[in-house]
Length: 485
Image 1: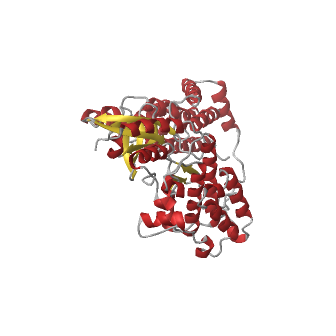
Image 2 (image 1 turned 45 degrees about the vertical axis):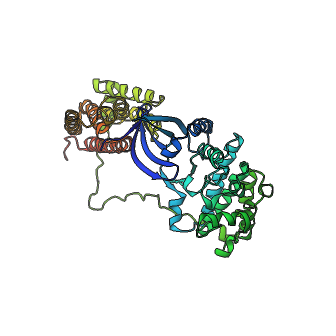
Image 3 (image 1 turned 60 degrees about the vertical axis):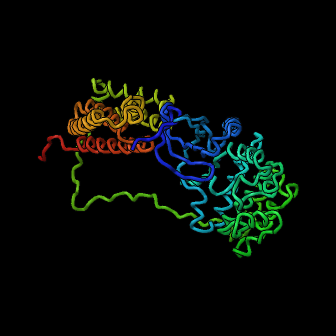
């Protein structure tokens, strides 16, 4: 299936989610060679020229935010096809799950819920200092990565939607999720940073209890409760919760903004105090200790060594590599230099490639003291990956035409032959391994999309290095023709 390309730049690869405001896709930015998230807005919104203008301005303002807890806004634009206009927002791609998905498993441990709410408040503290109010904090707009880090998404959208809804209907009730709407949003009044703090109170309530503070049979019932009802203290639903968290959530959910926390930093300080004062039930479970100590291998009784083999042969081999440079060694040095140079550029901006390229350069230089072939296997991988990334042999450029597929398959076959040659030849196998990297990674760049390309490259780099290293080690430790007297 052929993927859509927005703005002649962003290739939509996979749909990640869909809602009332639009659809989110995992996409490839072919200009900067990185994976991004693209949110395309609904056709109804696209029909409003004033909304599109407001949306562009708010997204550009949100792009100024630079914080680990805020999903970066990279770009905003419009795609025009068949006479239709489709606004889109390009954001940092975050691997993980939304809190909506996490909450399907029920309420969270207290320590985890408090930690997540604290990270959201840190992100909001940064945005509020830049005079940017989110206005739509909810589980679906908070991402949780595999490391437990939090990313708040969709900055720049809610304000444009809010102002458009006010212009069209005279109220702001069309914007946001009813379970998280502050009273001032429901009444169509002016919103400020304390509107976000109300939503964080609702978020923390749901993280701790598994349900929002207000529920009902219809959105109107829920909105009426936001205006007139007091929420049930979360400890009534989960008795082990400390009273301090009840008090904190009660303050955040005050109907009047003046009675809530003054700002995000004040609420975060109160949250930290409530968490530390919550006795043992609010403490995080002890981390599971993973054994990392490897016991030294004891000598096998079946293989005694009454006479130690002489050490000079390995030393002579090492001296030979260092003192008698070869063409293969020169190629290895060139690979180290190029990997070091690439690690200082922005040729590839995903998957910690810069750090891997720097590590490959250093590891290749160290490996050269032992084996030029191993140094080539380590150092030339990032170089070939960068060349493949900037080649024109990519689905985004050439499509699935038969002759390009054949070329990519031939490259894959040549790569397999080069790898076999590099594995077997312990004298000049480094040249074959360099050829392997260029042919293999060019083929990989044709068949896979960006998110998988970088992962396959890391697997190949590790696998080839370990395989060649094991082969070299085997050759270095093999007896050199001496016999017992």
